[in-house]
Image (tube, rainbow, N blue to C red; front, side, top):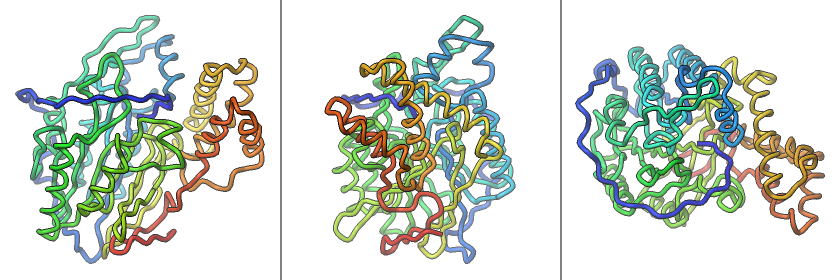
Amino acid sequence: MKSLSFIISFAFLTLFFACQSDEVYDNAAKDAVSLKSVTSEDGIKIAIMSDLHVMHPSLLIGANPDYEAYIQQDPKYLVESYNILKAAVNQLISQKPDLVLIPGDMTKDGELISHELVQAQLKKLEENGIKVLVTIGNHDINNGDAKKFAMNKTMKTETVQANKIPVIYSHFGFAEALYKDPNSLSYVAEPIQGLWVIAIDANKYYDNTDKPITSGVIKPATLDWVKARLAEAAEKGKMVVGMMHHGLVEHYSMQNAVDPGYVIDDYPAVADQLIEAGLKVIFTGHYHANDITKREKGDKFVFDVETGSNVNYPCAYRMLTIKDNKFKFEFQPILPYSLPGSAAQLYSQKYLGIYFTNMLMSKGFPQSDAAALAPAFAWSAMTHFAGDEPAIPMQILGVISMLEGNSQTYGLGLAMESLWTDLGVPDNNVTLNMVDGTFSAN
């Protein structure tokens, strides 16, 4: 989810699943996808597309003040979300990857009809011989924000509970899972011979009330389950990739202090345990940014490959080619939405500007000062979302200097500066070596 709101959430409970519904969805059959080996001479191609946030078109009818208030506090290009997904699906069909991975937040807010719309599009990929695996995000289940916005009238609409997800997305990971965690919606699948995908459910939907909880946690029992699967994969000689909605590690300097809730709880200890267990790469989303970070523990390492959102500029996904233990990533714009000057870019600029104006006013800035500073914050956020942050421009440096020069606004200056801080690994077009942890720009 990409709310930039500064939220911290704690406590979690053990999740008990109800019996699955008998309802059957018309998922693509498993035998529609031909398995390929991870050792194929020409390599394997995997697309990673995150945070689709599809809102069924029937959920917005005319102007609605509640909807306008919603996107001002959580700027996403929802009105085009379904069209963006259709464009991405058509591109993927033409590119013909072997596998598509989606690290969660398939829907705006867990609406049943939005999930069904996503499921129908994913089915098209499998009908064209492209395997799809999904995991869930914090917006996808038990969400009080599942609403229909009609002209001047807002109504609740049906949301999805945890037991419904393996039914709707049965052949997108759940039906063919080799293992399922009894304490969460985590699972292991082998979509390509020799490749295990461990999909980790770190969401707190079981504690949701009227809003989805932003933060995430890998529960102790689930963490032990993941480590056991990693050990088994090593014994069997399987290549492993992880997939999780929340970040495993921070993606810019002081992220957890600046904008908490986007990296899992107790991330340093959990990440180190997974590194020791043998996890070398995990695909994440949640923050709507294209960013890659590496964490090391002794001579071991893990790369957290975060992918941006379909509904925030630059509206893109990743294409990964795996060959000889080298992971080559390439930036894939979703056309025409990713073009400079596109409606998607202008939308992001407008609503991020409104978001930051409201945020600064909440911190005591007069409206005129907040409106004057907001474009610099929006520029900084969009730069981080796009990845491969350049040197800080002089205009932004001036704003940072002004904010950091005042004890009352010092933290805001650090927050802006941190968004321009890349932690060393190229974010978009890069090759990662899974043997020794080195990397190089493509």
